[in-house]
Length: 181
Image (cartoon, rainbow, N blue to C red; front, side, top):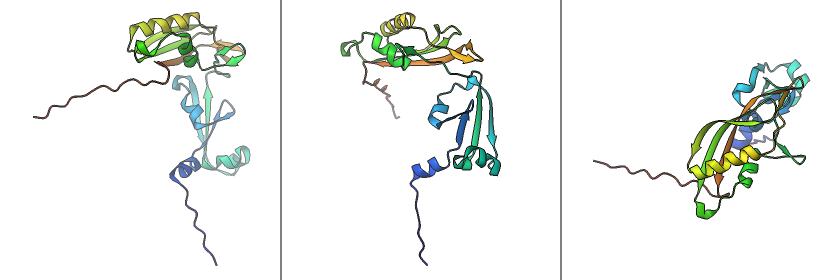
């Protein structure tokens, strides 16, 4: 008799324990689920792992099934010329900001209205007011979104815009001076 031992890497073990996520009836990855605003979740339910669950959802259900119901049927999308784009990347491309302007970051919370229009609700961070003004202008001039839909009607949703420019640069870390006495 021969004994074979299979060792899983830590990442394989963590992947193997990941439950199946079903959002509004559609299977989604854990990464996609993490991007959902908690305020958009109406209900979530953890199904027991039994024969019926595995028969309905397949082998993926052996690690559990999390059913999530959102307050909309279809998520909001930012579409320009028929192509779905990342809103933050689109806005960053509209802003003229070079290396000589310095590295700056802006984070804005915004509401996407039922008609697809955008309204900034809170400036969470703005390391440079010039960049903030340029981003606000680009947001005002950007095409409308396709709003989230519930039963065919637009639903307002909240989103976050994060931009660090120039592209490819990171904000410098703050220097902390500790004085020991």
